[in-house]
Image 1: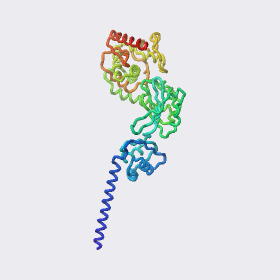
Image 2: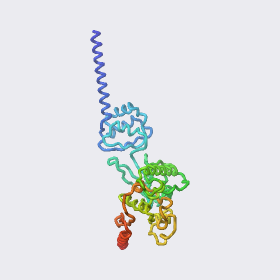
Image 3: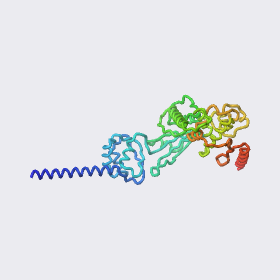
Image 4: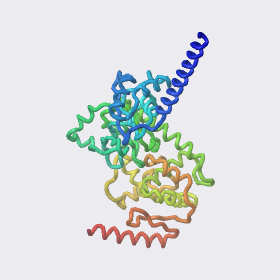
Length: 384
């Protein structure tokens, strides 16, 4: 009898173990399987929240089908105590495992309102956008120039929202003076700027910042990023360039940056200046003349006068040989790459062609014909 009881007990125990093992396997599969979300959502995790509370919210949102498995899975993975506060974008069909990773991963929110202070060539703009979870795209809510002094209606309410993300974005070709002056208008930054960064030393890029970040610290990050980029690209340069140093490359890249905004032209424009340097021909480029007149403090806003073309400055490449002493703006990656790997051409000249691009020429006669064509286009535009 006792043998039978023991046998039955052992059988029952084995069955229980098998059922428990099967349940664990089933739970693991559910934890890693695609979830029920049909469209992406933003999940808000308040400070002080617990994984149990988040699991209930997820269940209510229809993001998980088994909140208990979500909690147990997070605990088993050792992440139940690593919950981060913020707003998180949960893609459609996110598994419970993926959601746990999203809400416990170190870093900032991935959903919500984006405040981007954009510093452009002619002006700055504070742009506020919100993320549409369904499309994964940011939609502009409002934008304005902080210097204008008029804050749009609704701005204060937007700034009171949780989990705002702040960025500062530099356009290619801005000058260091422009960057410094515009950063002073960014009310979410603090601190005085001790000195003007060297021209060309700041990387045009997008920088994620935190409210109260020191302006000087941000400028250091911009300079470090540009220096690292220049170091990397210098190592990939074409052989035989008439550039003795990375500093000279940065000077020429800034000229290429200011001469064309057409991506496909950059390497061709760079080839013109490389050819001129190799043949000892003066660069004769208007952006350098303008920099000598303005010190990079503002766009000239008009054409260059003949008297200004004849004015002696260290940047007047109609009068000086070779490169000017410093960059004339902060060039972006594409212009630096183009400068260090220009096209192989025989072009020595270029002029605007009326389409936003340029007409290139090998000889002065050909160039003069292109210039005459451009003059006619200019005259026609002026008559409209």
